[in-house]
Image (cartoon, rainbow, N blue to C red; front, side):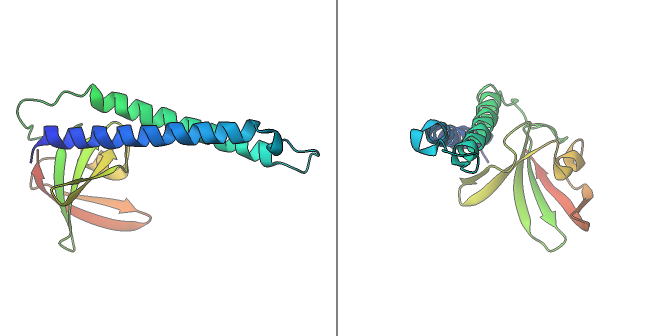
Length: 159
């Protein structure tokens, strides 16, 4: 797998998400300040609700900008490390034989990209799975509890 190509796909997806977030912020801001949204009584709260939406969209925009900044400044090491850390691409297999590819990052947790008909999910080191993976190596087993359910994984590869 070409990690640089995967990194480029992540950056492209974040740029797309950034453009969408910028449009959402503009629409929410315009709605919140539109004359039709300003209520004539304290019970008409559409303007207030729209301002809350604008605030939430603004925070999402900041998150995407931070993630894009992280990935565009990321330089991949020349050789693959054997120990899992930030920027590792990890293949896991669960107890049911299901495999998944994960990119461990500081930001953009939950982002999914399609690479050669394979879905790669970005997870953060702050997530339960990310925390469990840090410092592990190929062929290690890990177990985590998610929503009270124990999940077991075997690390098949680290790139």
